[in-house]
Amino acid sequence: MDDTSVLVTGGAGFLGSHLCDRLVAAGHDVLCIDNFYTGSRRNVAHLLGKANFELSRHDVTFPLYVEVDRIFNLACPASPVHYQFDPVQTTKTSVHGAINMLGLAKRVKARLLQASTSEVYGDPEIHPQREDYWGRVNPIGTRSCYDEGKRCAETLMFDYHRQHALEIKVVRIFNTYGPRMHPNDGRVVSNFIVQALKGDEITIYGDGQQTRSFCYVDDLIEGMLRMMDSPAEFVGPVNIGNPGEFTMLELAELVLKLTGSRSKLIFKPLPADDPKQRCPDIGLAGEKLGWAPTVALEDGLKPTIAYFKGVLGV
Ligand code: NAD
Ligand code: UDP
Ligand code: UDP
Image (tube, rainbow, N blue to C red; front, side, top):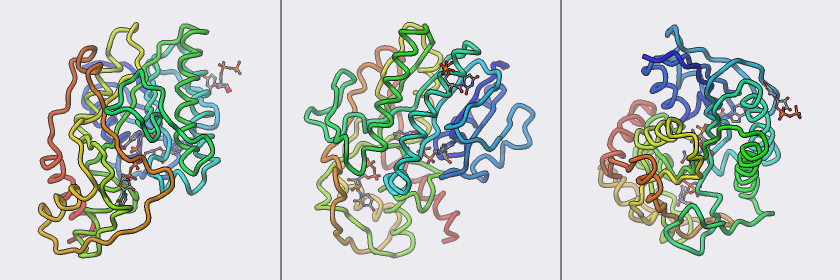
């Protein structure tokens, strides 16, 4: 057991709640803060009785004065539907949130891990994406509030590191799925599973030939924890994701097979700036963290489908 005190921002969200589970189980003193914009108390309700867990409503765009040893900064809506609902707030969350967490980390000399994203690569020209690729992001499009907000957060992390010798860790997370995704999250895995379970039409955007690489949540959290514990000189950025690459049509077929659903596929317009392909090069995570994903898509979809059956009561 370890009594390091750890702050998790966005801790009541999908990834944050799984991270809190692991940190609480390891015996850390965990402070979870969230403004419940897309997260929910339900995701951490099972932790509320634990002596080493505390939940507090707070918006990261406002300063936060606490004493902690480590900070995981996850606060930010992650699904296009949610981050585009109030784009100005999305950029503020990434940028002002990063500044506040960096200021806090500087004052208390905490190590800070930033949850960045594969979206910093935009609609990429190289494949798979390596960390030294600078990306192709539209600065003024409808996805920019998220992409550019996260890119600016990375810039701030590296400038505080160079200017104030702050201990930083940057992980670029690729599409991750699993239990506790919100049924109305809007991302493709939750959409397809919910539609299949309800017998509704499966909504394929565009021709369904665009690709994504899907990482099961347990693998992702293991990668984040290893990054936080890695030697101080390794600051990243490091890709964390599963390189198994699937078209959206392949994903739809797999979900239909695993749910036994007879839902029909329908085609809808492709959203603006939707990346055509995405797949992580995870060589660096393997070399520096000894990390690689262990859960194949089909194996990870099973517990995810079981979770949604429980939520939907079907
Ligand atoms: P999520 O929406 O479930 O979680 C985000 C959490 O942040 C929610 O609980 C939300 O209420 C909270 N939040 C939002 N704005 C806030 C604010 N201003 N102050 C305090 N809390 C705020 O999404 P997630 O999938 O768990 O994503 C967590 C982090 O991981 C995000 O930073 C996201 O950008 C990053 N990420 C996720 C994925 C993925 O596939 N899940 C991929 C790349 C990056
Ligand atoms: N900050 C915070 N908690 C702290 C220390 C700082 O939220 O414990 C915020 C503070 O409000 C400031 C930001 O972090 O807006 C950046 O702090 P820093 O010290 O880097 O900059 P400065 O205060 O000099 O602008
Ligand atoms: N998508 C889809 N149907 C849906 C939701 C998403 O075909 O109901 C597509 C979307 O256009 C994108 C891919 O699935 O090409 C992944 O979308 P998601 O929002 O999950 O993640 P991101 O685009 O941020 O990688």
